[in-house]
Amino acid sequence: MPALRISELTIEYFQGGYSVRPVDAMTTEASDGELVLLLGPSGSGKTTLLSCLAGLLTPTSGRVAVGETEVTALEGNALAEYRRHGVGVIFQAFNLIPSLTARENVAAPMRLAGARRREANTRAEALLTRVGLKERMSHRPGELSGGEQQRVAIARALVHDAPLIVADEPTAHLDYVQVESVLELIRALAVSGRLVIVATHDERLTPLADRVIDLTPERTLAVGRREVRLAAGEQLFEMGDPADRVYVVDLGRIELFRPLGAGGEEFHAEREPGTYFGELGPLLGLPRSTSARALEDTVLTGFGPQEFRHWRAEKNDGA
Ligand code: ADP
Ligand code: MG
Image (cartoon, rainbow, N blue to C red; front, top):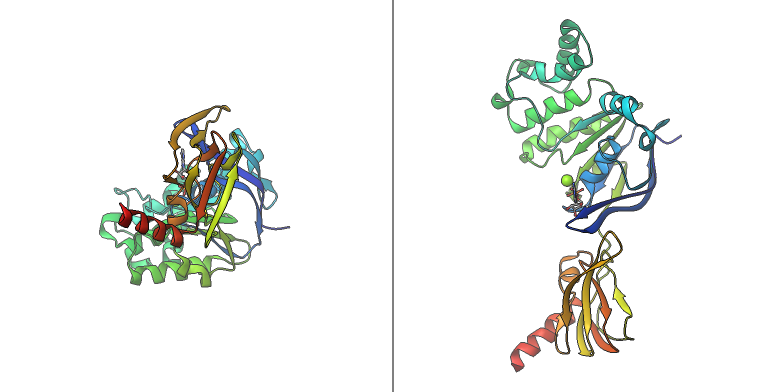
């Protein structure tokens, strides 16, 4: 049985009336002992997916199973228990308590779970030794470097010996010397009995991983020009679609709009002959931020990003 199984997972947010779907019908799995990299640029859904794996966010639909635990079916006490013991979380910003020493920060979740002070301290010391902080146990976060703070956070994530460890951009705030020690440590966590999932926007980390889950939005760059004819009411693309071409209206009219959660829509803009739309998606590698539909019989030219630059340069010269 895989250590992690994600089936048809969809997570949708509603922002100002319309929906974004950073995770869309995702199906994947990972095995015990693996280091899995969750790769994608900012906004691609890494934190969203990790939050769902950690039981902190309920998905719109689909399932997540960690070992034999069906996380997406947990409720109430069982969910609280999973969050506390089933998964260790390492945050981008360390999330250490500034007034507590390294030892106390690591001991805190054990104390919360009812462990005695002696017992919690002994285990905290063993874990801090393991992450190379034997000499730093009595320091407070403010007296530690970023890399050392991250290692305290890693030790803390290990206290309950959870079968799943998730780390959200664990190297984002570190310099290169610190990055190395933190990555070595994370790599070493991925042993039998544990699955480690690391979210990052940094593609350079891929060689470290046993498996890569790529959340990078699809980018299909078109080349050349293409004529497109639409009948009145016909849709050209939908918000969220991968963006490949920039469109110039030759004849007719295009309406840009955003579908709303409740089935309605929000008007965004209208485009007339000689004007263009949909340029940011293909140029920046982002999905369509609106839908586009013909208001009457319409003829368009769809340009690859390169040809679009030429078209605009010529147009500006002529003006
Ligand atoms: P990443 O961690 O890869 O940068 P996120 O998971 O934080 O990506 O965000 C993915 C998308 O979901 C973004 O478009 C973001 O604006 C949106 N999003 C994230 N959290 C929320 C939220 N709580 N409410 C509404 N939209 C959100
Ligand atoms: Mg994030």
